[in-house]
Length: 76
Image (cartoon, one colour):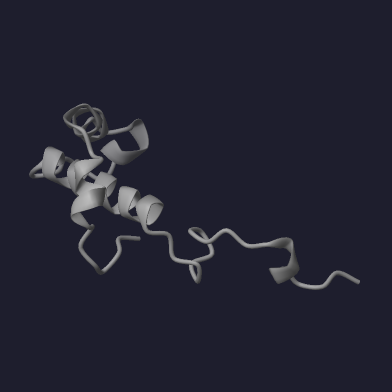
């Protein structure tokens, strides 16, 4: 699911032309959705959003946060 905020300049700087070119090639499971009008722009947006989650992790996001064992639920 795409984020609602724009990736930071730092995240965008980490996206390389090679990454965009590679990601712009559709995977077999993505082909069924049909072609993109601008696969490079779409790939760049996907990669920048992913990089943003890596550079600026959200501790409240279950996929982005790194929890300490003390923060887990108590086990019986």
